Structure formats: structure tokens, C-alpha cells
Image (cartoon, rainbow, N blue to C red; front, side, top):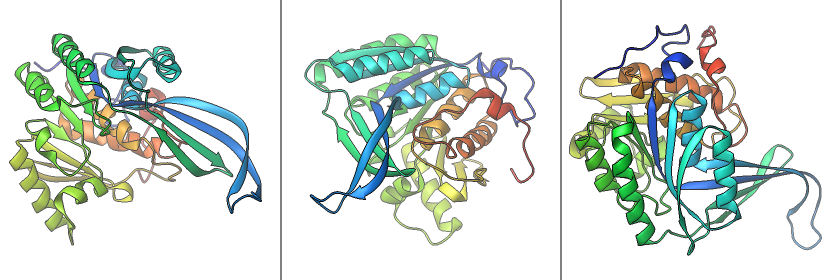
Length: 326
């Protein structure tokens, strides 16, 4: 049953009062994003690489954890279900998420290390990214599946954030359980085989991810044909292709619905897909129609790409009146 929501704000559907009625469950691959910021004054005498003198560092939740913090930032009651290692990075993630009002149900696997992405930034440019990751064990993933099924009665929307790190090994059963419980399931997909996402409510691949699955297209008509074919094959209600500077396009049973980009200046696209799926989830959780939810997500994406690294959109940014040209 659709919830009674506050009147839409001038921002085109979003208000924090409205968002606060939603309950969102995020499940997937989490990671700790570390940033080392420094200056570059010379090239190393040992190899033709810049020498970065580190001046400060930051830590932020990444992956599914970034989806959860975006949903919480927009006002929804947010729970995160994930697997981490028994290590310092896992403790840091828990601390960061708690500070952002995310209820984190972290299953600990002592046999793995929490995924960490370390970015070295000099002169306002990313110079290098170093990844640390291992796959979680089957036993821990099975326990997470049980926790997932127990959580379903108390949420309105499920978001599955797949970064191909092994945290969603049972995604087919998760989708089936959520749909049986009457919960919309949004999936941020990964890889070239989308059959494992069959039956989801909405998939949100970016342009390059969709091309990997569907092949190239010459124009919007070919894109629509490929998208609708895949949507019907997988039994999806909708397929949203985020297209960077071209905006985003929703394909559903009614046809093709395009949203032009709202970004005025693109600084960093890291985590933009996390913001998009989080915003859609929050809006659907409080009973917003899909088309309206996509519009809010498009505005949120335009805001977050103007920020450095994995970032969040705040309520006051979305509640601000739409400016000319948006």
C-alpha cells in the first residue's frame, strides 16, 4: 500500500519529511575508500613517476556502504547488511557508518580482509588507485542470507549493490525472497551476465556496463530496442541506463523516458551510481512513482558529480529551488 507523503517540494518531488517515512535495506559489497592528498613537486629519480608528499588523508564508506550513507543522508531509515574482515578497515567502516546514522549489520569473516580502495591524489588529480580485496567465505554469506530474510518485513525497499566482490553470491534467492515479500528490489549490476538479476524491479547499469551486456548501438532507437529486449527477458519492471553527460533513460512497459543531465560541472564521477540508486530507493520507499523517483535521482547525480570522491547529497541541496537550465 502506498504511504501518505508530504506535498512535494519545489525541487520536484523530494522533501526530507517525505523521505523520513521510508525504510531502506541495502545489501552488497562494501569497501573502505581511503584518500591520500598531497603535493607533487618533482619526479622520482628511481623511476619516471611523480613523488607525492602526503599532507592529509580521509576515509569514506564505499560500495554498498556508500549507497547506504546516501540513503541515510537523504533521510530514510537505512539498514546495511554486508560482510567485512576482522581488521582495522572493518572497524573504521563501522565507525563511519554509525556516524552517518546507518544501522550496519556487519558479518565478520576472519579469513578475509575488508576491501580497501586507496586513492593517491596530487594537484587535484587521482594519480593512482591501489585495491586490497579477498572474497568472503560461503559460511558467512549463508548467514547473511538468513539475516536478509529476517529483515524483509521491516523495510519498504531493497537495494542490492553488486561490485563483484563476492558479497552477493545468493542474489537470486535474495531477489526471489524480497519479491515474495512484496518489496521492490533495485539492483546496481556488474559483469556481463544479468540472468542472476532476473525478477528484480529495476536494474541501474551505467552506459559502459549496459554496452558490455547488450553490445553497441547507433542511435536511441537501437538503444531502446536492446534495453526493452533485455528488460522483457529478465522480467524487470524497469531498466535505467545512466548515460553520464547524456543524462539517464528509463525503459519500462510504457516505453522510453529520458532525463537530461543536471550536472553543471563534473569533478568526479566516483560513486555517482551509488547516489542514483540510493535516491531512487528512498523515493520509492515513501511511495513515490518511479518516474518521479528517477527525476529526483537525476538531480542528485548532478549534484554529487561536482564533489570529490565518494560523496553524498544532502537534503538542503535537493530541496533548493530548481535553477534555470536544470
